[in-house]
Amino acid sequence: MASTVNPASGARRSPIRFPRIILHVVLILVLLGMVFPLLWMIVISLREQNPDLTSFLPLLKGPFSLRNYADVLSLNSFDVYFLNSILVAVAVTAGNVIFCTMVGYALARRRIPGRSFLLLTVIATLMIPPQVIMIPLYRLIVNLHWIDTYWALIIPTLVTPFGIFLMRQYVQNLPRDMEEAARLDGAGDWRIIFSIIMPLSRPMLIVLAVYQFLTTWNTFLYPFLFVNRDDRRTLMVGLTSYLGNQSVDWGHLMAGASISALPVIALFAIFQKQIIQGMTAGAVKG
Image (cartoon, rainbow, N blue to C red; front, side, top):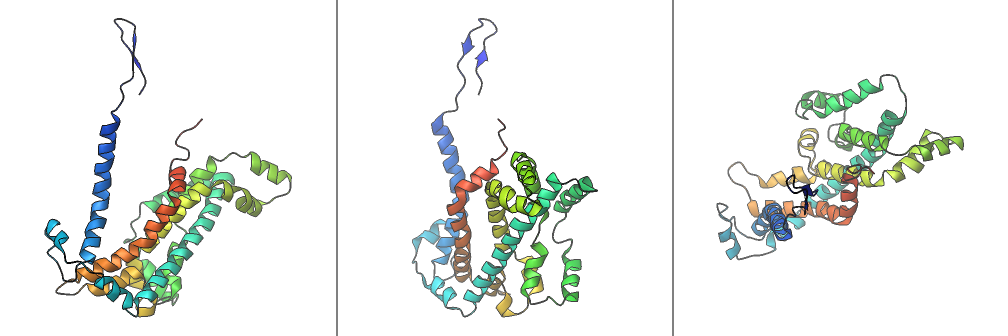
């Protein structure tokens, strides 16, 4: 905070500093609020019998066991669900990284007819909930004979308006010097995108990749609609087998959910520095 001047005396007063200990207490409270649901999920997964979920403290009394995890991993279809989720999430993430960069570059650098209208269309698409296009998209998938195929899980989200807008905003703020020098050397758009734009956009590409992987990994609606075969189901749909009409197998459900959270936690742990760098890119202009 900037220092202030006393109008009566003209003396410059020292800036008001927020006490560091109060800042740390606030951050710790926020951290506990974010970690508590994860802790609750893990504790429930370690209980062999369905516990009382009305309060947290009785859950800590035990007994605890890894039997729920062993039961979940021993299911014949769990590895299939997990691999399907990995395949779909990786394919969708790779498609968004490549194609959203291309479209974002075109909207940011190329003078194409109706560029402003196309950008407004992308922004308007962001405001459409996925439930609105659920029925027409299902009809399209049926007409293309993609039901119970990986195409139905990958193609609809291979390019997303959020990724296009994100990359367009980032590419627009990149310096043009290297691109102009590359064009003088005879480089075309493809060479510029893959040799200059994508390396310079690495922080934002990591943010887009982690975001899209997380979104695709946790998607339930479209895989539930488009897939009926057991060997094509993703992990999120497979976990619904623990939801009964009269009761819920909380122990096995939370064990499966804990396992499904591992790839996402690993991504954030590995790329946390790049994620922060990408999210704060452009926030301060020198």
